[in-house]
Image (tube, rainbow, N blue to C red; front, side):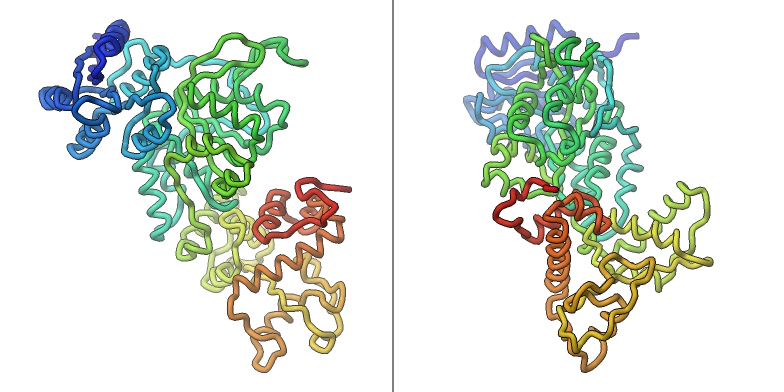
Length: 517
């Protein structure tokens, strides 16, 4: 038995356009009603329910936004698509933030019009678009991309562990904005769980049955960006032995997650902007554009607004991506979540290793809480992995943080002690201004009458110690960041993040964006 056709209300004051939209939708098999003003539309909405409302922004007796507001206040289920004049990006952004499902810019491309309406109808609780069909294709897994197995909405939200006010706010925002098509920008420090938020957005949306394709924008060679994003045709470049889809095609009907969006070069930013605006892409080597139906979720640890001011990021792309922003707090601002996070991570470690893990004690938890955890949840997970590997017995033993003392005079430092084999690379002495081993530093800082005073601003003091360490290590390696990262036992991305956060400048004769050696 055939499903009842979806019903659409079209609101536009121009008779020719209204007729064009009506005929287009009738050909697609929808039931269509029309209105030429806000009041006529309200009368139609009062008389019956629709699956979607398509409305012009400017009407003779008001604005389409008023209808959107009516639908929200009455808690109606109709999805609203707003049509705005070309170039009115501010109106489109405001509509999306107010709850519109999507927007179209005039003059409306009918192919795009049909695609957006189909997406809106499919999101209204099971009424299918008459001719909707999800196209397949070669969904390649190149470097920097992955198609993630979809989780249930509840399970995806539960993976954001914690009950602090900060994390509850994030979960509530995810649940609120997941149902629309508005682009979302997830902002947070490295290791805070930006990809978990993207997974929760996808799983809680009407696109949960579609693919979630995650792309690390910083992991793709610049000369391959266009082919990876938009696909390529056979023979379009050396080695292209067959047609292949790009990320946009692979994510059709689902969500495209652009991680570290701030790492995209300017030339690619321009092409990405056009693909988002036009909802179509042109594969490399092709003369035809392909319509793509994806929702964009992007993430960054960078201050994109500052990058816009400095010219490193396009302002128009920034406004397209940052329609809705979700900010993930760093772990240091929600330490009350540490017990639950540790329990969840230890459970995962036990599952992955197939062995029981030592019990988390109050002493171990206190030792974990003493760490600055600047690497957030990722650092916490590494800390627990190390603790599980090094613990003996039934209880988890966690090393306290390495505490760095102020540069001390020779009188304040006794003869150097040999570093432990399992010590941090920062605990060994190298000169008279070297860093105290952890135990000595703790004693020096906490013993009454010590020559090292207690800091009045602990975070600033720790930042200064970290800065001094990085500068010394960078100098030793000739400012080669890759070698510095290897020497300090952290990743290249962490080195870059710390250099930027601590405002460490390279020598004048070196380009701070380039490694040497």
